[in-house]
Amino acid sequence: MPEAWYMNDSFEDPKKEHHLDPPEYVPIEKLYDLSRVEYWRIDVDNLEKEKQYADLRKSRGYDYEDLVEISRDTLPNYDEKIKAFYAEHLHTDEEIRLFLAGSGYFDVRDKHDKWIRIKAGKGDLLVLPAGIYHRFTPDMENYAKVKRLFCGTPVWKAYDRPADDNPARTEYLKFIATSA
Image (cartoon, rainbow, N blue to C red):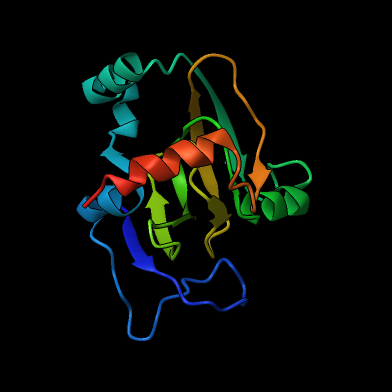
């Protein structure tokens, strides 16, 4: 199960944990209320028999997938890609990621515009809603093997912040305003 916590404002190495002092953890069950990020635990060692995964793909229309292996040895233009992943941005579609191996951090803005860091690892499936400001970085292990899921043909466009006039952002803000 992933861990989540509020981040400090340090500009040190993004692969470090960046806890507040003292740390302020966010229970995974509260993540949805704070950001509309969803989480499932998936048995990736038996993915072909994993009913929850199959049901999720079917019910949400995830009909396309690919695989990305994030490491210096496997990702072409590694430094450029890591820099792009870590730039604060949003997408007009959900971002669905299933960690098959390794680990990394998804940073998401909560409804109060504060950073929450989510450490995801093997078996963690995260769905970031369209319009949420977020970023990704590997952790200090510097390795993640991730299945990316999409509805239809993948849309790779990232809109760097500020993108507050983007219709996906406007809809996200309406959506998040309804949470407790």
